[in-house]
Figure 1 (cartoon, one colour):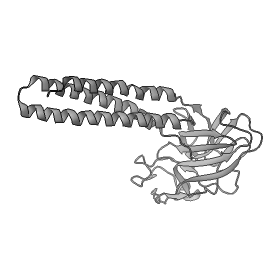
Figure 2 (figure 1 turned 90 degrees about the horizontal axis):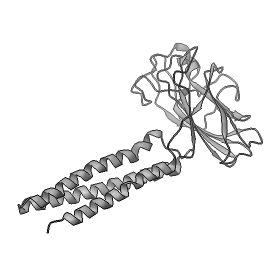
Figure 3 (figure 1 turned 90 degrees about the vertical axis):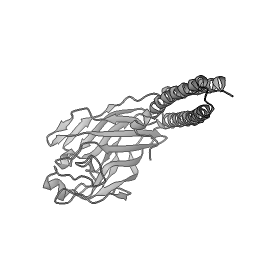
Figure 4 (figure 1 turned 120 degrees about the vertical axis):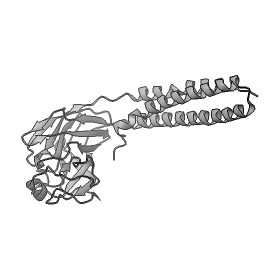
Length: 291
């Protein structure tokens, strides 16, 4: 499985930093009040507040730094997405792929992002891409995802972790697909979110037609992960020609584009900005402490 973290987690360090700045100002305000008051009980209460808030700041700083380091050390995969507004004859499509290269292998995480699809032609069924240095045909080593079956009323069965995904395969350089390679009628197509925006049965696939509900069960809920052997490639190889396939034909092929994410060094630098802030806060505390 890829070691990449979701893009939403990349904002953790900034959120924690912003929170720490606000709380730091509260501490400084509290310390200033200690100096101004002559009431001993008030001084004691403010000192306790000062200690609690300072400890909380340091905890937030440590959490933010840890989050940034995790992001920086795990962000090795390349993220590709379909263009905004992509659509085929059956309706809108939206998907993402995270491809992580290693020596002779690639890990691929495919996600269908299109909610409450109308037709099987909108479901994600494959990914095509080229890798520099490849000396032979790709082969699928492992696959996994949560599978479900659509019901005649648009509801769906709870997702069950399934590995391998029996109808997926890989060949050439690289054709990762649930259609054509294994043969017979396709299944294990990847579904986007239900009508409630998730995969936990809070919503249904109310917009789906009867052909989608009856003909291609089971489906994969949201995301599937694959390990593909590709002879000759290394972690330094380059990826090109990324295309997403949708439907059972495939019915629609969409070129993917690379999504730019912050460099790991940028994330670490942002976290390190917390350290001088914390040091200055502690110096301020010691300087203004009232005996």
